[in-house]
Image 1 (cartoon, rainbow, N blue to C red):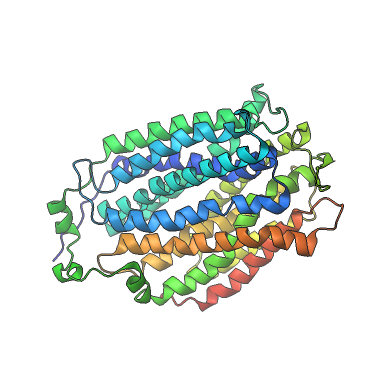
Image 2: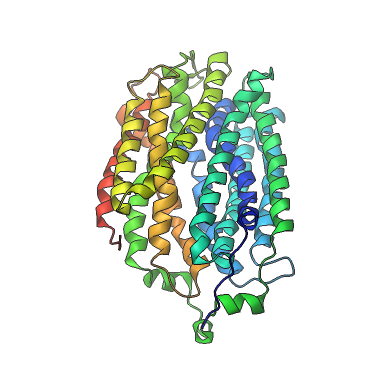
Amino acid sequence: MAKQLPDLKFSQLINISFGFFGVQIAYALQSANISRIFATLGADPHSLSFFWLLPPIMGMIVQPLVGKYSDRTWTRYGRRIPYLFIGAIVAILVMCFLPNAGSLGLSVGQAMVFGAVMLMLLDTSINMAMQPFKMMVGDMVNEKQKTTAYSIQSFLCNAGSVVGFLFPFLFATFGISGTAPTGVVPDTVKYAFYIGAAILIICVIYTSIMVKEYPPKEYNEYHPVDPKEHEDEPGMLELLKKAPSTFWTVGLVQFFCWAAFMYMWTYTNGTVAHGAFDAPTKITEAGAVVLDTASQQYQDAGNWVGILFAVQAIGSVFWATIIPRFKSNKVAYTVSLIMGGIGFISTYFVHDQYGLFASFLLIGAAWAAMLALPFTIFTNSLKGGHVGTYLGLFNCTICVPQIVAAAIGGLILKVFFTTPGVLAPEVDMLVLAGTLLIIGSAAVWLIKTND
């Protein structure tokens, strides 16, 4: 019979997840600034979504592999920490290169290819660094303290997001230039990535030093695995066949949710620049009407998007305290997604930069549910020695919808919303995002749970 994991001090619970704060700053900088960076480099709205294909593709590849191989890794430095540390080192290097894609004397096409490669490496490394935190809680924290441990992780996640989202706006407030020549990323964004990289490595080093993972013999006392379980090691496809039904039903809800947020990350910058900041337009050599990314209004809007995403994170923190008060996870999930859907759709009618706070507070409710409830529902159905692998595979329910949404986003915008000779209405993609969340709220009722 397995021994019970010991109770950990509150400080130990914080140490396990502390590095997540730095990783989430990097993720927030990517989420809020990638569309802005590539639009600055020369991408138009119809091609922006293609650059967003790279992050979920890399996540779908990396996270299952990290889960699978870290389940079987034992080193003097730990089980999960080596993957965390390597991912963080690569991430900080890429964060120093990515915002300089337009400053290296490259042509527009070369700069976008360079930026795409850097984005691919950034998301690979962020995924590699992010997954171990979830697994270390499972490895080292007993059932009684898991709620506290994941609450700490959720708080650090949202705190890191707020910091990352606010950096460009704060640097502009301190007098750092928010504009730059055509095709060059402003210093506010560059400095945000530099400082974010520094915080990331400090946080990861702290966790790596302070956390001592259980050695193999002690680990097996707490997590005994049937020796026969590894005699015929099942592959990932075999594990998928044996996955509990919650994997697929929660995955369906995830499809609508993460497709919606992919469109938020892709099209909020253009929506806010045009609708709330009246950014000027220009005509490209190909005759397309696009926003002038070198204008003060466009870059101010880019900084303001960070503020809006921070408001979303704050709304998420608040709503996360409300979710446990619901008697049913499915009711909480449904209500949260409907609120987020209303928030997205409202952006069509709100043209005041401060009025958008209400929209993004509502979107934060959906984000809180997406961070907590799918993971809770799915892990409650897991048993056996392949938890890390299943968590990695479950990440595919996040990545696949983003890939699909990014692949067809530009086509949807062009075919259904864009009028030739008129600026592409990116706000319509946010209305589509709201519609997807409301559909997802209906799909919640296909999930079988023991509330």
